[in-house]
Each structure stands twice: as structure tokens, then as C-alpha cells.
Length: 114
Image (cartoon, rainbow, N blue to C red; front, top):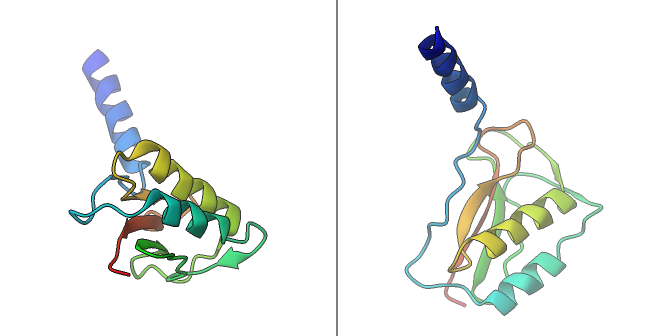
């Protein structure tokens, strides 16, 4: 009985994880200053759709849905997600899900050549 309960919980958790957050990216790291400026430029009161880009200098920042449609999201969600990447990922790069009822929707921060 305990095994069945554990399996059911594992399946429930696995099915509701959504986007798999990661701290992967280029072998180069973007400038934290450029990334912080990119975050500041996001209008919290606006809605953004697939492909909205907020890059500054060598910090590439984008909201993407991986082909799952427009999935508009508030700027505040993008800002908070981007800040989580900067706070949690040691080299200031990665992709985190936006948790907006879209399993493939995410914010990516990475290095780009200026």
C-alpha cells in the first residue's frame, strides 16, 4: 500500500512540473550589470508574447514558448523569473519556466556577442 501511494505521488509531481528549470548556456557568462539593466527595462504593467526580447550588451534575455503559441505573460512575471535566474544560477545564465499554464513557456538568459 505504501509503495502504491509513493508511486501515485511521484506520478502526480512528475506530471505537474512543467518547464525543467536549468542553469545551462554558453561557455561564456553574460555581464551581471547588462542583465540587471535588461530586467529594469521590462515594463511590469505590459503583457509580452512569444519571442519578446530584452537583451542589453552581452546579456541575451528572451521570453519564449517553444512553438506553443503566443501565451501572453505579464512583464512582472518575466522580471521575477529573470531575477530568479540571476539569483540562483552561478554564472548568470539559464532558462526558468514562467508558470503561466504553459509547460514550455520560459525566460532564458544567456551570453551573446555584443
